[in-house]
Image (cartoon, rainbow, N blue to C red; front, side, top):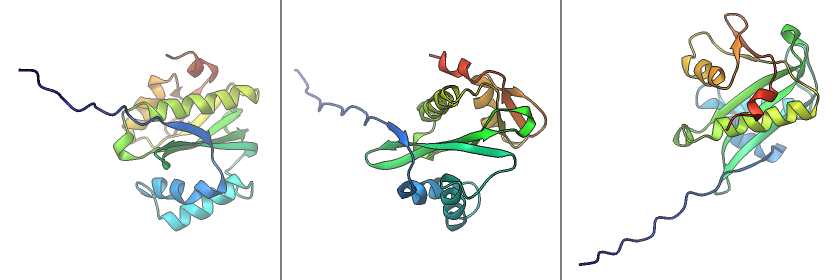
Length: 165
């Protein structure tokens, strides 16, 4: 007896692209899943992207990159040039929707941001990480970041992220 099984559809491809102001609402929703409220994040993200909101020591330029699947924003990352902690760049935010976590989306987003940093002559990149956020600390460590102090981690050469497989 030969059983036939329906074909399993291939996983939908994740597309990565620069964020626009049209993406702000979806980005804010992702941020608000763990921190704050979406309307507050909408304002913060929109003014960050437009260059009106500047984190401490932030410089222009800056970028946000979204991960999109089935026309839905499932993750994003943002970063900018900086002089904070003697770094050249700072990873501002990274978020991935719960259902897509563990599928490589965050790693891909980090890779795309690392490309942008390298294209902009940036090597030394820092990121603010809560001391109790063990998952984020493990993710950054896995990708080559080191402890700078209790709240900050550092890539001494973000280009190393690009050589990861």
